Image 1 (tube, rainbow, N blue to C red):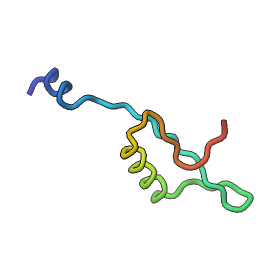
Image 2 (image 1 turned 180 degrees about the vertical axis):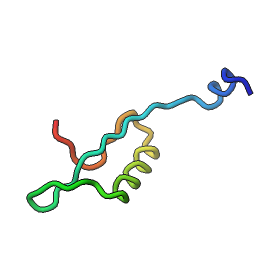
Image 3 (image 1 turned 135 degrees about the horizontal axis):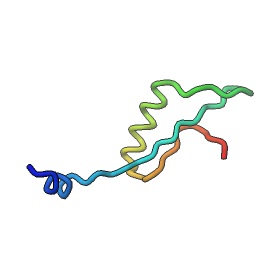
Image 4 (image 1 turned 60 degrees about the vertical axis):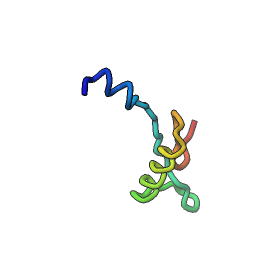
Length: 58
């Protein structure tokens, strides 16, 4: 299958997944592997261009 036909049948979809943190009491903590994995699955299922897992500061 040529690259052109491949891209027509299977378009590339770029997604950004931002990894934040979780608040535990008064201090922040890193996300666990499970939280990252489950968040990534939700991001793919939601099919949005940007998805945030946890909390981020802006």
